[in-house]
Image (tube, rainbow, N blue to C red):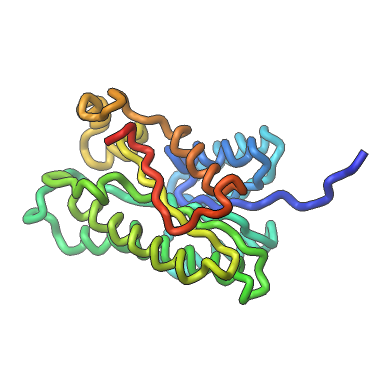
Length: 254
């Protein structure tokens, strides 16, 4: 019998305590990954995901970190280094949404915070990951997966134009970074979830939003976080080994 002594691959999921991030953490563990996840305030939810990962026989670490703060991002990666000594996949999932509003009613502080978390945060995390993954830094290579939104294509008029614009910025960043690190062993791709049943819609003031719009979705229903997680894990796998700088819509056809 051959005993596999290779360490498990490590996946870091920002915003991993709920919704699509939590679903991705659980599925990654089921597929053999050790998991690091970040959260901002809800330590109970984060620890619940950690417990689920442990039940699946994998190691897990929850780190409190605001991905828009470079010092907190650096500390998160230091904690990852101390506990696991490697990173194979970064999933930039953390994002925020604020109450539905037209553009003329948005204040400057809201615009700044939306872009800080949704666009700059993934750049800060990817910067740290590339320093550890890239061949030019003696890394083994790796995968970066950015979670955008169908709103980047649709614009979210009358609801979340600032959120949609921040996701558009994330998509442009995906294209640029993918080309920048393609010969350094790193693949960079982006997933656009559509209307997914998560708690995020409550932040926009309409918890039941997916049910309201589901008739506009060609498949006639909203998506589940686990359906997004499966797309993330596919892009992270060797089955997607020649795919970089591309976008995968998980939208039910919308």
